[in-house]
Length: 344
Ligand code: TXA
Ligand code: MG
Image (cartoon, rainbow, N blue to C red; front, side, top):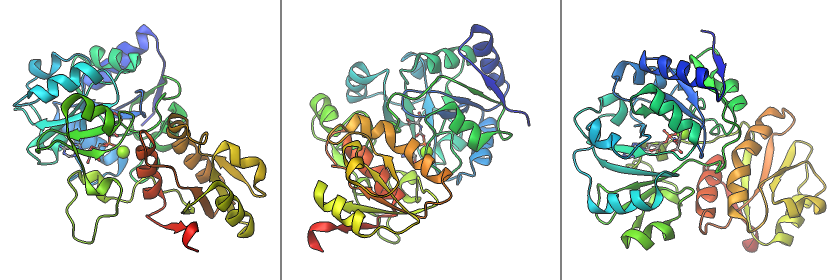
């Protein structure tokens, strides 16, 4: 299949909408990461997403809307509680996904057989235009091959999906760089399943106490069931071995310089680079969680492209605010391998 590269023009948005309405697959930009979209109401189209990504069928998808009225218009949920209304008012459109009891129109392929559905209203203007042009809500996971870092540019999507999908719409670099926050309102108290650009503190300020799912910061034990099926897979895994080093600035710099081997590289804060004597990739600015979120996936992809790198010494981000999302993604890329420098 030839994959069309489309742009932010009236004609191309119309073309993307037609492909989606006809059951095709289109890579679309959002403010978080690029999505691999299909008509959410068409189970057969949605099944093609799983094939293109190599994604296990038991991992449910997020349904994207471009207007809050779409939820009722398309019977996407069976209940829209007060807390959902408050969250939608405050954070939509934006990088928050809310899980609710699913409505009658949701095919099993979207919800992976669960009785809930994940809903998101992206803020990216081009995402909204494409959803409106399609005239239907769009189911979309991140547009990477299953197990690779999520794509934050159209070139990343092409790299993984060229020849596997009908089109990619280029909307430039994603501003957040990490996937949306996922919160379920199907449990009491509401539970954070995946940290993202909207922090736990911001959510609590609007709806009160929320629980943080164990799998956000810790490894699931063998046999433990994941509340969010996506959490159980080793995600965002680069080809090189990644080790996270927890400790101070000087502790990190000393350890890395003393354990230099030819195939090793650093994934570090920009401020560390001048003190390191080996190849280094940026994990954004120290203490600036948004810049870390923005850099993480594109640096993991750059590491993947560099055949010479077999081992990565990564800094351990602080799990505060948006840093919790950076920590959550990076510790999965490291397969939970962490060295505590203070304890050596
Ligand atoms: O920012 C994002 O959310 C991006 C863009 C494209 O919108 N999408 C994205 O989708 O990250 P995906 O499929 O890569 O991640 C969706 C996560 C998975 O961990 C999945 O298991 C979880 O949300 N999820 C979806 N529906 C769920 C449900 N009904 N119950 C529990 N978890 C659910
Ligand atoms: Mg994903």
